[in-house]
Amino acid sequence: PRIASKMRIAVERSRRSLPVHRHTFTIMLRTTLIIGLLWGSAAPLTWAAESPSSEAARAAYASAAALQNREAWELAAEEWQALLSTHPSDPLALKGRLYLAICQIKQGDWPAAEKSLRDVMASKADAETISAAKLELGRGLFRAAQAKPSPEAFALAAKALGDFLATPPGHPQAAEAAALAAESLWQSGQRDAAITAWQAFLRTHPQAPQVPDVLYALGVGLAEQKKQAEAEQVLARFASEFGTHRLAEDVALWRADIALATNRPADAERIVLPVASSKGPRATDALERVADARLAQKNHAAAAESFAKLAAGPPGPRTTRAMLLAGRCFAEAGLLDDARKWLSTAIATGGVTALDAAHRLCLV
Image (cartoon, rainbow, N blue to C red; front, side, top):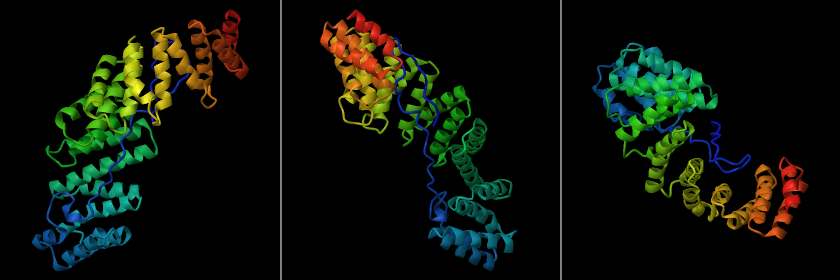
């Protein structure tokens, strides 16, 4: 996953946990098991019966299709290869090479699958088959880029998916391809192009199941590009429309960070307090933002209580920082015994905050 942004807020703080890295899309390998229905066409045997193919080619095609429909990928691949070698000029061989590539993908042999898909694209296959090959090539290159990330690998995926999307609109997998293409652009370093692609996705596919993921990616991308007003608008829409989504808590954290960065600590506290009060996996991250927001509002007593809760957590940079700030805030609130306790504890850790804690304990 990509490193999260190092966005700084106006409140004094050291290292802290940022929201989860911008969601990288999980490849949806939903290769249709019924081969003939993969692209909405008729079943393979019907297609074979209506084609100008030889009886032997149709029989070989039916045998391979039956095995693939039962997910016997290795056996099906052997049958497709037999069809291609025995009947290389038969019209069924053009479609068979696409299905061979799908078997190779399922067996984890991406180099062989990529070659098969490129062979289909260079052949005289019908437009539907070539379009299917372009989509599978784009998906496969995206998966390969995720396995060995590099800007160059994602750029190849972006180009392949863009080639697929350049085909006539209305393809049932267009939304998936568009989402993957936008993510590939971002990962390849083409940030402005990725943002434009996500914005276009939301206009073109408003009802697609990928909309929440795209909203999240766009919102965080805008935040990382320092376009905070636009980011807040997008993430606020996510919060309004997808409040129970798996990414809802991370959206709240990003919105809180944006509010703190734009000097709106009261908004930050309001946004993230429900997450901090929950028992979810992001509750501690949210509590830290609540504490920072209260400190920024000079609500020292409340901030001290929040920092004290953080300071009682597992050892680490966040805990050490919380000890210091708990002591500072208790001192500002006039609760000097509590201030001494936490400042002394911060000194005892010997961490980077120990000298500051010692100075403030002397003041107390």
